[in-house]
Image 1 (cartoon, rainbow, N blue to C red):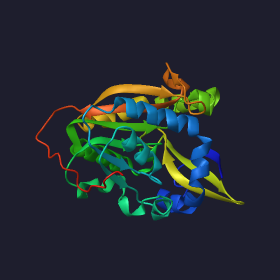
Image 2: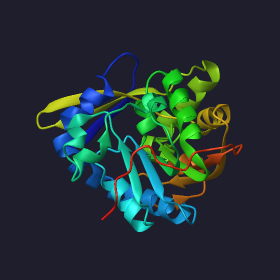
Image 3: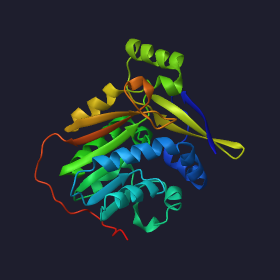
Length: 264
C-alpha cells in the first residue's frame, strides 16, 4: 500500500472512517513507510509525560499499537483507545479495549486522563472545522489538572515534504483568500490496483494556535519533525508539527478514567 496523492480539493474523497475501514488490512505497511517519523513522535511524547501519570486516552488510536507502546514505556496503568473505524479496531491485539467514537463525540466520556494523544493528523480527518473545535474543547475537559495533551499535525507549509512551489502557492492563497477550508485536501491511498481517497485537512501553526486558545489550552512546546527522517528541525517549513499542551486554567477535575484496561 502506498500514498499516491495528497492534493488540494473540496467535496471529494470518502468519509475518513469508511476509507480507514477499507485500508485497515494494509495499515501496518503504511505505518512502516513512516516508521522514522512515527517513532520520533512517540519518543518525544514518552519523554514529556509528567512524572506520576497513570492514565492515557488515545483519540483516533488506529490499531492501538502506539498507545500500548507509549503506555508501557511510562507504566500508564489505565488506557482508553477511541477509534471510529471498526476495521482498524480489528487489526489490534486488544480489540475489546476500544470505544467506537468520533473525536467530536468525546462529550459522552467522563473522568479525566493524565495523558491525551491525538496523533498522525487524526484531527485533520475531523470535519467540519466546528467539529475540530469541539474535539479540542473535549481534550481540555478530559485532561487532568497535571496532565498533558499531545497532537501532531500535517503542516500546510511543510516545504520539505510538499515542495517550495506548492507551499508558496498555498501561503499566497491563504493571504489573498483566507478561509478555514483552505487546508482541505484529499489523501489517496493505493490499495492493490484500486485507489481509496479520504477527506483530510492540513494545518498552519496559526490555525492550531487559535484552536488551542479557544479551548483554554496553553501550548507548552512545539516540535518540528521531518516527515521522512524523523529528525527534529528548527524551522516550521522543515516538517510536521507536534504540540505539547496543558490546561490554561486548573479547575476541579475527577482523577478517575472513564474506562480502564490494566496493562500486563
